[in-house]
Length: 243
Length: 248
Image: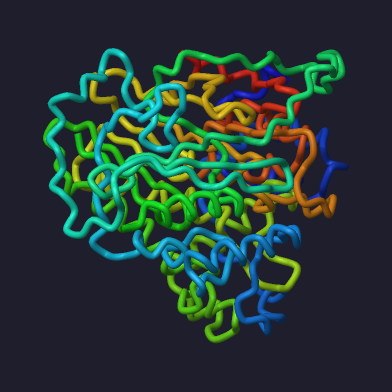
């Protein structure tokens, strides 16, 4: 399988064949692999015509329901926390309404390449964008101060917030009145070392125990930080920072 | 080097441009893409086109070309993933958030390219489109964050223009669910990082494959042009056969 997988794409016929076979479900699994040999390239497939919306347009009675199923406990705490920050926020997202100070059009520019306040913690977005070679952010031209500084400078840590998988906690660093960094400082801890490696069920693919690597990276990829717990902790931290 | 982070669509969006001639103003078209996508596709804004469609105030035929593109991409992803990816919610409404983010990142990157910029990255909530080279003239290096230890990078990728998207359980909450298993989230897998030809492809397949649980990495292995790195709840990682080309 390894050798066959990456053969060059053969064209639209193969793509269509693959799509059809996918529709047939798991029963067509073997055929699917053969189709892949022919080179269907899902990744560059042009979008198909718009899908039929019959099934969807049937039931839009509900005006604006939260689309994601959330544990009841989450919803309750969500409501409580966001009420403190933004009473009108209807849904479990950190929209502009949830953090009013960030919603204003003259969005304060973030300070570029501000060093992290605590070297042991990573940054979410501005994070390790300072590889050893290219670091030297000293001559970075300081961005002009934002027209209105909504936040006080400093580090603000949100509360540790429960999620179905554990607790989440974030810390916000404010520089020159703008968000310079949002760092998760607590993750759910679910690792269970006692389970043996040979229980792994994908023997054909290479596997490894994850290990900490050098932090000399420009950008960090991670699961999107849009969970209710993350937003609650973030919103509370920003509320502390508000002037 | 122009670089800013803003909160849009409920997540930190970071745009960084390494082109020598770039100015702060060059960031705006990229951020505009996210603001416009949020205004059009947010299920949380009553006035958004999506909300109007969900309420039946407008018909699909009356929707914008962007809405048609998103719906088409969502349907294609549903077919590609054997139904694991589906924007249709049990109450009959549509929630295309799983497509819109990757699409918005790609649009933002295209907006920067249209300005003649070559060296930049767009990072929205940990999903990344990096192009060209970093400010030091080297390849952009993307670290995969540990799903267990916030301070740990457990893999370093050099995407060289490819898109990198990570789906996970812990921080995404119930955003991803397995429609076949009626489960709030797949058990056993902590995160799945997918590298694809661009961020839209990486993101939509990461979302779909993560919903498959432990077999998600097998699915990525079989789709041409995609590579993946999957971490299970025990801290064991599994990688596709072609991932090596993206390792430094």
